[in-house]
Length: 102
Length: 160
Image: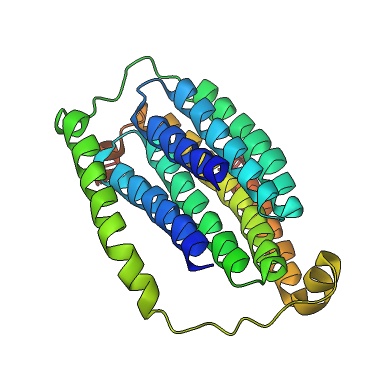
């Protein structure tokens, strides 16, 4: 059973790593948010993989469904914020947000 | 097991593509493909409800939201990414994978054994009885999301 667990945790860590690198490297706001989504995929894979390996898949499933529901409202809010930011700064570049002058 | 590994590799490849592709629309579609593969993995792990949610909500609804946002925020000028990213991202990612492969097994060995009590009953019982407070939290979060979107898109009133 440990081997299956290892497989899922390994790929979950790869997804989370890719998302973190994307967050560090990219400048486009939508790209940054896609990186956050990739991290979220890694987390749900981690939860379900551990639940599968430890024979408690039902609880893991309930947690993942909770996470997905939360993710949807997170996405809606964040994308609304991105639209508003783009209207103000006229670009999608995250470096424009560092300027304190309105 | 082999099919599962291939699906997992596909998820990682599509996720990396979603981050690396320059065209925003293409990267949104790559993200949807990764979600689709992840949903198939969930189905094969005997977690059909999570799979259905992943495919219908994440691969469907969230992709629609992304495409809508990309259409609404077209500014004409492209965001210039730093040149370092083009070759540094794959290199650092491969290094991360190597470290992951070397370290993760010993790390997993150090995790104290979780209590693996066998579950009984159906998924519905677990969701509605054991995790009732999660559902209350979900309702609160959805309400908070609705109110925040309303607050972000409100119209300016005349006397402002």
